[in-house]
Length: 581
Image (tube, rainbow, N blue to C red; front, side):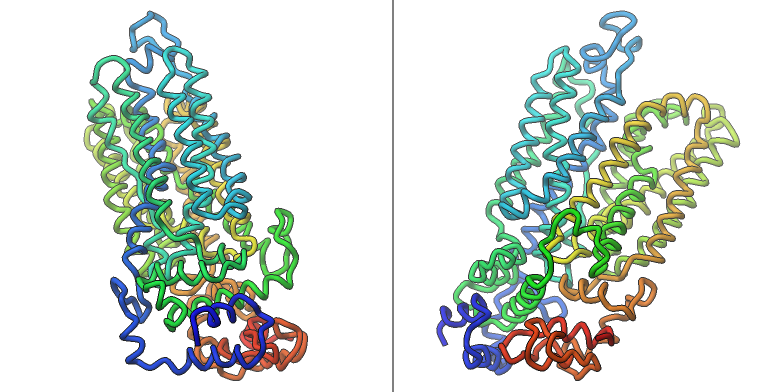
């Protein structure tokens, strides 16, 4: 059979049964010798070929992490640089930085508002133009905002407007990058690919440079991350699932093949590509029977869409209520209160711990799943925040060096837990929890909740009240964040399903299984192994309307069985798994 006819069978679901069954037999009859012939991948993980492009994708997409994380590290240093203060702050004695007071809340808050709206706009852009093109558009918007900031001389509002525009790009990227990574990554390494990291040490080497070079260099470096992402992502394959949703099946097959390290000529015949293409196709065809995905649809109870939307928004909110930004945004201010003579050093320490432990997080989230790291991480973070707050409350760290040291250690151990669990974990969850037809919109809503808390509510208010808090209630603030970490752990334990190792289509099926709950979701695939892999006969009794097409024998047979129209019975399989009519 030619490649064209094979592709045609995927592109047109109404083809004759004979051609469909020939394709099906072709897949089943691939020998082990044939498998070895097609394996030109970089490596195999649990029998699934992983191409070098997947590794490239991880590196390039991590630049998105640099972009929407870089501000967290650099803004707290910029606002205490002498030239920046004398240029934009209100000074009691002109030109004397020690007499200057800067409107930190406005600077932080305007970027915050931009990211919020950018995240919401990211969904329609990604659905309309594709994941790759959406990221390139958002890189350009971000770069425009950075250039406006760099051109600021003495007008603080120009700098603020630049941050607002840059925020639109940052918000859009924060919604689309994890989405793109999750849709392109094989389930076996999806957690590793979706985890990203952030640098924080650049200001250490620039703060003493002459005139405006110190802060402009820090801001301008952001353009490097945007350029790398813009150029790099243009060379990467488009999301196979977005291509499938637009019925571009030939490009979808080539995208899957490229990510697996398989040549174009072999793409349509390789069993791994055909298997994934078939799984995506059955999900897309089943989704066609449902309502068009709208913003309102994300809050409907059908298929647990509302459940998953609210779960994603809650986890993103709790991520920003962990207290990490209390240290990252205002670490230079906070640690002056614990007796550190050079507050930039404390930022370097925290940034170094965060950078290094993010790599640990990539391993943890892949090795131990999603639920356990987030539960244990929340408890760990809460413990060290209690220690930090209690130590600072019991004795004045300015007067007691041992207390100050204990607080620094506590902060570092808190960051260790955060960087290896909640920092990458929540972004992974956002990318893999939602169904294909509404994934972009639900991911955008979840990400907007992140920015709503981190920026508009959390950081705007935190920026405004932190000087008063550190002066009046001092380190008791840490108790509030400690309680939030415990609350986040409880939410994960009660509501988050374990999605590690599952394809995105299997994750959707798991959330729709009425016999599965968050606490027993880790064994979902084992409990349904026969149905998912061996075509076992379930008790779904999905006759007629229970099949995807509403005809044929929808007996809940496994994923390789087809109905009278030659189309896979996803809904029949789901009925068999859930045991409902």
